[in-house]
Length: 132
Image 1: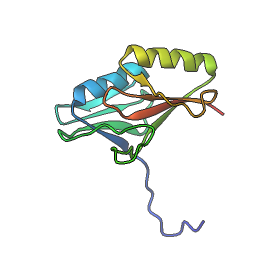
Image 2: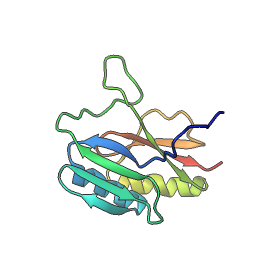
Image 3: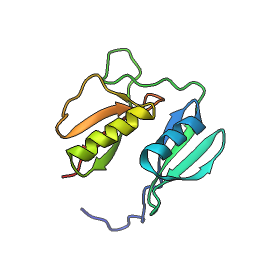
Image 4: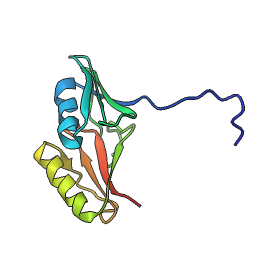
């Protein structure tokens, strides 16, 4: 790939829209153990304690949760997050923790021996994936 002339670009954040910024950012803080970088009623950012790209949350009163798996004429997902775990035992613990915090295990699982699909309290899909 020719990289001549490319600017140095890095990912700052993945932004999730939601109706309740505080509730959704707090869900991910409790799930992941990340730190809140900024938070108010309209926008919040969380970041891993060692830094890196953030997950941000933007208020949208008209937000409609996606349907997963996709269904015709339903709101479609635009992005989902994958979180790595080291082994199946860690996956089981991560799923239990997510459920205790208000996540829902998706009714359809396509690779349950490698990843588990969940939805957060606002309906965004995310997965726990065993590292490879």
